[in-house]
Length: 169
Image (cartoon, rainbow, N blue to C red):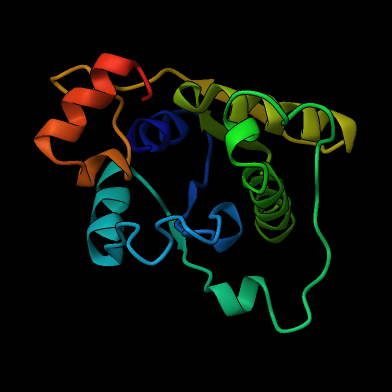
């Protein structure tokens, strides 16, 4: 994501970075509570890459008691990642729509690493007539070839090797 910030810094006047671990993207037996979070590190990295504003919403603020409105891109998310994690894209599109509404960006930067996610966001932007330009950023890889990712950062050496060999990054 740092490459997204560096690119945005060169292309726009104000760079806003949101940092939010979205509980809606996690299933009941997934790693929401264990997902890596280091706000101080994220803030330092983002500011050093050119972020002007860092938006850290909390889960209760994004999904207050009684929250019941969701955004879904139907018939576009039931294969690949969406097949094994049917809740995932409903969480993605809901939070991204909320973030777009709060931040009001002109341009947004998403990673090519999450190709299905980028396609879903692209379709959502088009279908909902959002006045937002989507820029897809190339995947940045670690020295071992695995895609840079918060989730990949807490894999063991053996898990990294397995992931790399099965191309699940």
